[in-house]
Image (cartoon, rainbow, N blue to C red; front, side, top):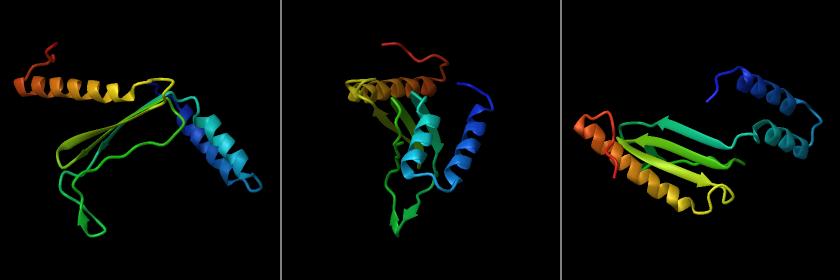
Length: 126
């Protein structure tokens, strides 16, 4: 992870380019992909509501989301009603068997849950 002014400056310059009149949609798309195309992996953690929410009059049973972007791997976590959901999207050139990531996530999360229930700082290895 890096902490620099580069992302903010990049976003500002990109907004300036996009709002410039006269650019074709193709040129705008090219600018966006150039600005963000260097990202290879993204991890997102979104704290959702702890209490049930309604959408169009219906209570949501579950909540998840995915990022649609030209990156190699996206791993997103969202919490809703005390449960955590993981969303995983992978480019086949990065991970030819993306279902394996989900299997590994489930196992690692179970280990973390067990360790936290024991009050241990280190999860047990299997």
